[in-house]
Image (cartoon, rainbow, N blue to C red; front, side, top):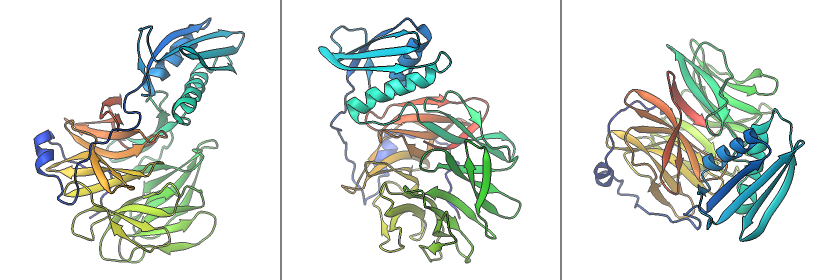
Length: 392
């Protein structure tokens, strides 16, 4: 049995059920981050360019790092002016706190807005390129047909990448965010494909008889982890992108799935049913030192590793899946979603605070962004298609 991210259970999840079905190996820890309350911000607009002013306001709302207000006693006040292709922004905190200039063209207001708010987030919170980031995901556009799409971080500007007329699933960004790896289903096997966004060209990275799936690139960009069945069992491998080097990391009768790399690239987290049910394990990229993580629920699947050393995953609580975060530094987990439905395929944002995931509820599969600090969730993509397997 394989434990891919497309989990198909629908049952209302209650808080009481969560309390009664916690794993005995983990304890709930309510974490208060050093900045658990957003600063308030009053936005006075960008004089001289309404379109740019609205775009910046949109990013200030969607980035999730400010509470916008009209109160003159706000923690910060942002003012700006645009004239002859030049933008000047000033962020005040009682006295001028941050000021910068940026040139722009009339047809790239969204890009300039992203860069402007990203600059502010970087200076205030050390968050890099959140508004300029992209998400990739699958959409079921026909029976037995899923294609890969990309969108801006807030769900806007949706574009279709693949046109394979089959199952194109499990997208994963490579470092630099110019390439995607994904799994392509053929009649009798699966391939791991690399898609280059600038050139729109694809190449097959690996193809053995049977299963080739779960491709995810290491932080240095030289290797990728994958799940292969070439040797008679479903195991975890690491493959060089430039050479033919292929190393098998697990060798057992269990089925592995869903690998993800640690920020340093030294370790890989993955799912295995070696203990009977799917759980999270961490192994050195060299293939040694495999350990089991103490996670919530009867199952733990679909891990993703943040830059600040936390692993988000889908936890089966009763008959439904919720989202939890495992802190690699403390060994403790925390539930971050209490809403109904099955929450699947979580993926961290660049700020290591926000998470994108699929919510499967009442026959709909929509994409949601969850704030891991406040536990608030908001939908960003929904409609006639069923969306799944997002990666930020």
